[in-house]
Length: 182
Image (cartoon, rainbow, N blue to C red):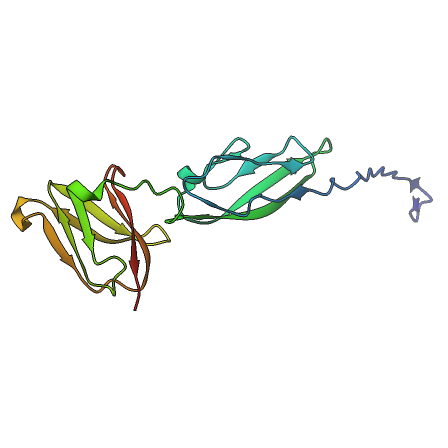
């Protein structure tokens, strides 16, 4: 209450409502690592009813074929009845997985790599036009190659760093694991 010099007084009453804090969010992406060829995974945050955002996320589904190779943060945000929000981030790593699910091509007739494994220098020979890409385990293109009548359907590849690679055609009908050791 306030009283001034003329003995006038006034009183102000303020009502404050304190809302309960937002429920603690539980959210983790499982599995934490998968391949680009893996099936989509359902995202599950608690409490239910929140929204998911991130690369490769649509509604409550993460698609590794959409995200591509890399590590991605997925955010789960929940807004409660009092319009208070909370969020939690979980990350997922998507790998190329060159040794899993690689469809082998019939190399005996149409295509040969030799030697494989090799020390970073090898020859590719085909019996038909073939456009190939050498991709590392991060999904990055290391080299693009074209085998056709101009180069007698053969190419010598040199100076490839040590590692495991996938040699694949543009339409992915040809895929072969390539190993470089030193």
